[in-house]
Length: 92
Image (cartoon, rainbow, N blue to C red; front, side):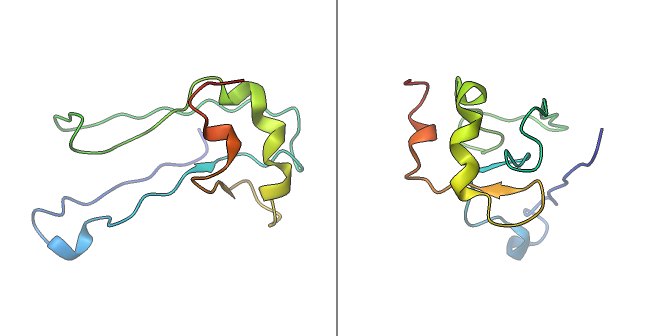
């Protein structure tokens, strides 16, 4: 376990609501090319397809090294543009 994220209930304060999403990888293929990272999501409230949450794109773990050109900072977080080919929904 290396970290966690918490979203505040924006029903109490509308300005807390996340207005955009971001695709990313939590490991940098340049810094840790053999690292195996497993990520999960635990919701403490009822959720459905309209409430948002974690998105995991099928088979992206097999294409992890394609993110090398996106890894521009010396940390584990790698932003992935929504147009990147790794997000082709499992297509090889």
